[in-house]
Image (cartoon, rainbow, N blue to C red; front, top):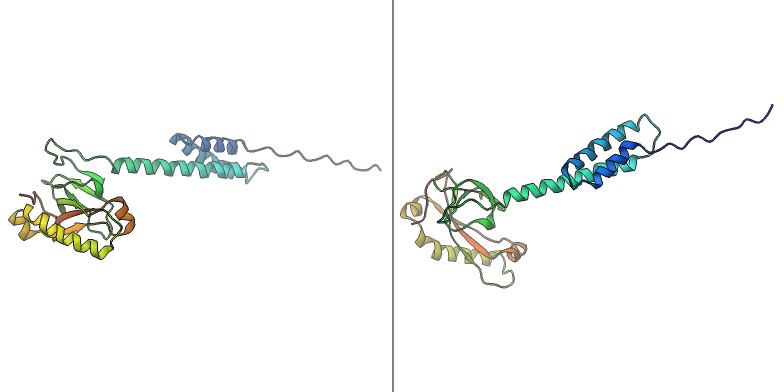
Length: 212
């Protein structure tokens, strides 16, 4: 009886969907391609459960790239929405509600959303609408190294009392509470040394301007 002859088993090829997922992941500059990369990558991984094929690494890479591209696009869209300058009339008054960073606030602006320990963004809206706060005035601390939070707070209290109190109406003086937004640490100080003097509605909201 002759010796049995064993033929080498064929080397399995790569999964086509896995290859396509990787290609779409690389082309994720286009949001549709990023979505397709994720879908094809998931399908390719499921197919490999029932097939002996290479391509797991490519499928996973396509999914990861697709997710990263979509996260990047999401961040860009959110940033574009938040950083849009609020619509203003010829006198500079806000005419429609919009989300903006605190740095976009100007003297006279009415807004809501500052009732937190750390404020990054707020909702700016016309003063004729119900709002929580209004900017009275803005001034900058002297240039120099971070002086520490206690000194910044003391300077903000003194500066807002001197500069903001003369600008508000008697009604606002009686009914609203003064406060301020300030750089709370050295990192914030490097970005802006501005003190934003504000009056807040003690409970809920108020309407109309607090300025004379």
